[in-house]
Image (cartoon, rainbow, N blue to C red; front, side, top):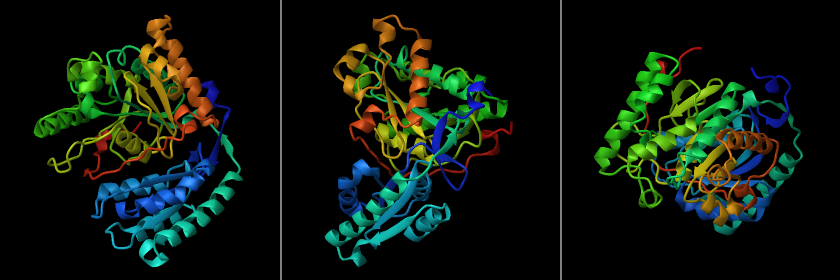
Length: 405
């Protein structure tokens, strides 16, 4: 373990399961789209006090979505949860409430059909959230170290600079975090097509290497069935020409550490190390495009426990996230100049100012520490709390995915 982790230098909010959060949010979770407006109105005047809105829009049950909501409502950055139900949706609200209660968090459930409708539910919800937010603001923190962190990385709005500045710089930060015992997760198996053999060569066991190859092959089959892949017009306008070229840039986010395991959304890394997240649903193509926006990827990272997420963009993106902060890394110096208020790191200075990958990687690493210490990211300061959750289906991972070390 790196000496920096021997003496804790960060502060976290302790949870009953032994994890620690870097934030202490009150989550308001709607359990069907019909309750979305009421939940949003509960949150809106209390957002500066740490109230965050999440939810599942579907009226019909889905095991993946239920698991995701369980993981999100018991995320280490969450201190209390208000569930908002219409009353006739199929979501098992009682099971979710029990999971939250068993985690040691305060939980309340409001059913609109029983609470008296829109205004009455909003009033009751705001009163409860206000009380919880006040209590959470006064909560004590405890020492926390790097090896207790889970960090994710995604990229969106990629262009020709992403793979030579922002993504590899994020990879350098990942290498340092992994070396110090953190769990780091990269994903986008649909954007790793062509990189499967390189990844397999980094796997800690041959069997894990086979699992990595299989995940990418599944992604290729999935997109072939859909008739299109994870390659947008914006990517082409930004100078990318093929999915393989885009894949090499996306792959660079993973750094150079050995790959210690492969997980699926909602699986928690059992220990520090580097993990690939397989985001492509199992079985036949049933629910359309795997992740319909970058925020869907961030949500899946959070469901696997990421305290914060690194987001690399070349063309520019202004989104943030509910629950877990987003550090925005801009790969393109021209984009950074236009969108500086939304960007935390200017990786484009590798091109414009001659900075090295190690320079920017160190900047990202230090910013991770600062954000874990309470510093707000640009997206947090601007009030970005985007969230999206849709239908998927997954089979459990096999034993080869998490080799015993």
